[in-house]
Every structure is written in C-alpha cells, then in structure tokens.
Image 1 (tube, rainbow, N blue to C red):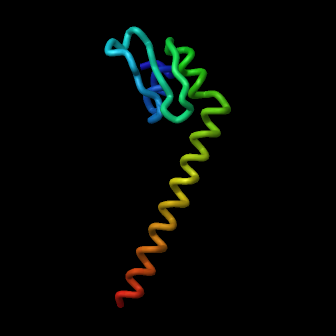
Image 2: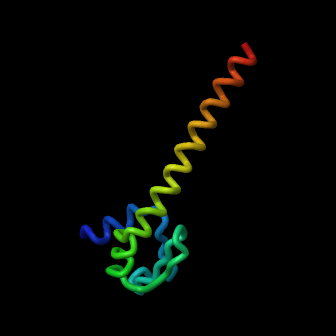
Length: 80
C-alpha cells in the first residue's frame, strides 16, 4: 500500500462513492467536498482546511467525553 492510499484510508471522514473503487470517486463527509482521483483526495486530506476541521471535531469530542465523565462521577457521588 502506498503512503498516498494509506493516508486516505486512515481518514475516517473519506468515503468512496463509486461502487467500483477504481473509478476513484470520493467524498469528505466532514468538509462536504467530493471529487475524483486519489491524488486530489490525498491533497484534500493533507490540506490545512481539512486538518483544521478534523482538529475542531476531535476537540469537541474530547470536551463532550470529559463532560460525560464528570457527570458520571457526580451521579455516583449523589447515589452514594
């Protein structure tokens, strides 16, 4: 597997939209961008806008997970 394909495949926001992967049609569910060609997809994944969007989503998930943990601890303390 090439570096290009490895980077595309590990990005959870990229989906292939063609039934035949050799047609190279893809979309980014996060950025609402679509196109054809693996190199174009790779450039999108490595681009600043996509990286910033991923960082924002990951930060929001981390905050939500921390809030859930704090809520669970508070419930346990109230039940004790």
